[in-house]
Length: 304
Image (tube, rainbow, N blue to C red; front, side, top):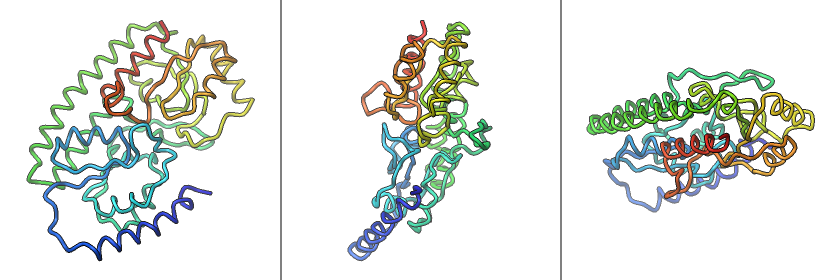
C-alpha cells in the first residue's frame, strides 16, 4: 500500500473535524499573527529563529520523527487548512505533503526552503535528487534567507523584523560553517572516511571533505528495505579496502542493522548522528546549530 492510499481515511476524518469546527465556532476576524505550518523539526528551528516569536508555528513531524515515513493524522489536515503559510523542504523529502495540502482545501502559501540550492544527484536505479540539503551550512543559510523573504511578503508590517532576525541567525551560521570546516580539517584523510545508516550526509561530505564510503541502506530515503546479502558483502568489502574506522547510526533508524554490519566488518559503531531530525528540547541536539556541533564532535571522537 502506498503512503497516499494509507492516508486517505485520515482525510475523510479530518473533513468531519473541519466541518464541525466551522459550524460550532462563530466567525472571527483574521489573526494578526502569521499562522505557520512547518513540515519537520530542522525547518521548525529555522522558522522559529526567523519568526522570533511573531508567528504561531506548528511542526508536523516532531523532534526525533522520520519525515520519510511520516503518516499524517486528521489533525494535520486541520492545521494545513488553517495556515497562512506552509514551510517545506521540497526535493521530494515530504512525499505525503501534496495530497495532504490538496485534501485540506488550504489556501496557504507554500514556501519551498530549498529554492535556488544546487542539488546533489544520486543514482538509485534512476537518478534522484538528495533532499538532505541542510547538512551543508551554506545551504542552511540560503534556506533561512528564503524563509525570511517569504515571511516578509506574507506579513509586510513585520518584514523588517523578520529580515533582522534572519541576519542575526545567518551570522551564527557563518561562524558554525567555519567551525565545522576547522574541526574536520584536523582529521587525516583516512579518518574522514565514514559509513552511515542511509545516504543522508552527501552535502556534508562534499562541503567539509568527509568521504562517504557507503551507507547500510543504499538510498536517500529510510523507506528503502534492508540490503541484500550481496549488497551487505559489497559494503563490508568497501569498509575493509577503504580502511573505514567507524560506522554511524542515525537517530531515526533502527541501530541493529548497523551493529550487524559493524560486527561483520570488524569495526566499531562510532555513535549516533542526528541527520533527518533534531533531538528533544533540552538535549544537545535540540537546535540545528547544537545538532551539527554534536554530530561533528561524535564523528571526530569516533575516529581518533
